Length: 479
Ligand code: ADP
Ligand code: GLC
Image (tube, rainbow, N blue to C red; front, side, top):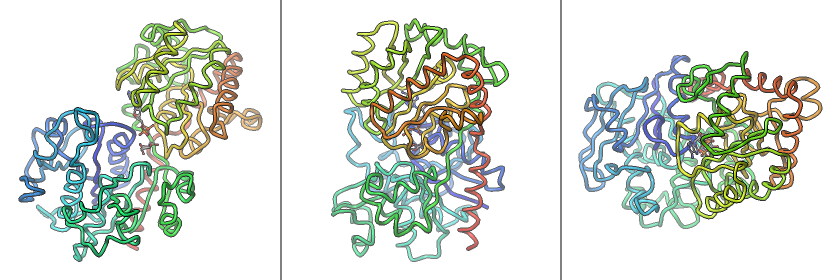
């Protein structure tokens, strides 16, 4: 089976978050299921540079007042198709934001172009290649099912994957005609969302099926607290909505073969983490106690990620004797508050503001525990990396966090199945409680070590989830 992924990010070429990790890793896992995936991405400078040997695939003529074409090539084990449209994508840096830190004013055209290119590719079979199914990821790709539907031509079935419903791609009504969307679709049953054009809404309406990145999030999305206005639509389509937990790329995230950490280790020798802990402490100027955990955070700094709750819980974290290393960037007030906390607690709290892929590996390898206090989390990948690295996750009980970490409650401890700590409700008090529970267990080295080994052996690769995607694709292709 041939599948076309349409996405705005793909690791290792362009990444702002977990979407890139998933789009970059799932194709290899699907290949083992007999499914050949090609990934259509905008030819941002980083993608164009990686695709030096690309072959022309399809000329698109002019797309939103500039020349555009598709080129294809194989790089880093991925079959990429890049949309070359220099007037839209020849801009370095973050794929969504201009140098002023604001969304590019023409993002509707940039990602509308991506979707038009995807639909023309799926319909016209250039060089004899025609996908059996199109899987669009998040709002940037979500007009693809709409264009295919509006074309009126026989088209392959479509699946839209929701990685985060908080980002919907909403634009003023007037963009509909610029994007060649027929006005008859501008209704609540179509792509209209409270008077605006909703890219994600369109995908959720016009795709044959909807996937999201964990079973819990699939249920949460049908509730107003999580659905962000789309809960009604998702409830109506619940028979076509599936939650499949993300996996991780074990060729990139494996403490036994990680080139980015000073000491490699496996479940049989987790004590070698101590070498990485020391390197991490030096890098963050920490003097962590041996009898209390060194916690870490690797995160976008936004309200979603609940880092304000962590700020509130910091005194309790420090009271246990623990320390904290944080790597993140995002909202200025959160960045400032954590920097101030580091300044006020030298040797105990260390903060690096910015985005640093290599440093994130050292944090996973050197910390004892990773904190993920998200208010909502469709899947979350850092807790999965934490499991693999024996860095026991402390997580909010929501979405994929709830689905991937087994809480160290009495029953789970007695049965020997716990892999981390969950807390609910998602507030500073319960977060503080979970931090204290982790610190108390850390003070029992035998119990902690057993849990570290167990976490490291917990399956977090893509195999079982890729099999679920493959089954879903087959159902859609041969209903
Ligand atoms: P989200 O996609 O919502 O940000 P995920 O947990 O799914 O959350 O994925 C985040 C990805 O981005 C992970 O690979 C994580 O390691 C990475 N990441 C987040 N912040 C940083 C940072 N400041 N530096 C390096 N990597 C980061
Ligand atoms: C989104 C979500 C995150 C998820 C990632 C990959 O960015 O916020 O929870 O892990 O997509 O699916």
